[in-house]
Length: 419
Image (cartoon, rainbow, N blue to C red):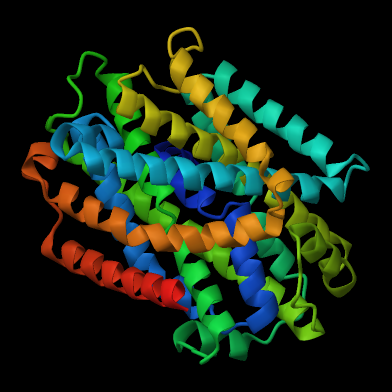
């Protein structure tokens, strides 16, 4: 097999793990990384090395649960755990996702407004309509293929970074050596960065998409009950997840390093919108870096809205017992798609209740961090439950990493709450 065929084979093998990794760099995450880079320079680059093992561990747990049970996390909680836990977690995911949807839509609209002289509100509505029509009319396979190509748009940040002058010695030092400042703003920003990198909604999306793949190939499978999966499928899932998480953090690294090399060193640390961040880059990094930053926001934004709204749809469908699937038509899964539509419409109303897009984007990242401990605890228990994963329980080193991640997020959550 020649190199070209190997690359094509590898590209075809990438699935929900790669897409999930790309979506982790949504406009909310871009905001958190931009705030970190513009206000604190390279000081938080080390977090992207630190969080990678936890990202891989948690996403592999979620993928294994979905593949082995044939349904998502909400469906498994409904079948195997108390009703109060189900309602609480479903409520958390729906609320945070709706906030994230609204923030991401306006982040995209603000970026597109730099290129098109159309009011942000109008662009937000048009983008929402495009995303919803795309999600409803395209098949699951078409959406998956499109998401993979949209993920490639994130390389815009890598190209933009190499267009600016950087201090590689400082970057390397802050990547390998953790830096802390006894400053409340620094610590909350640090928590937002870690929280958005370990976004809880991604666990639900990962499990639902792996279950979707299983049901696609085995339509008569009885879901939410352990069924064996071949070793080849496990290897594919693990490779897909590892590559996706590495890809995600590499892109995050370049976003933070880019804004540190430009906005931080110019003193433009108090940005209020992603639009301002892009505009500030124009005189500092040049026309091309500015365009690449803007196009990166648009590319990943077009992925993130269907994923966030789809996660809401999957959660509510499994909670209420609806037929929910991106591979079904609107007529076959009406409630699922209506839930997606309503979540996007409610998200569009966020600015009208006095929350600015940058506040929604940044504090959604903080909120993701706050709810992480609860969802990590559930994920750890489910990944060790034989009724869900059979004999394929998480290995001891994976459980150890999971508990360390739980402790870190719990400590950060308590600090944010009491500060």
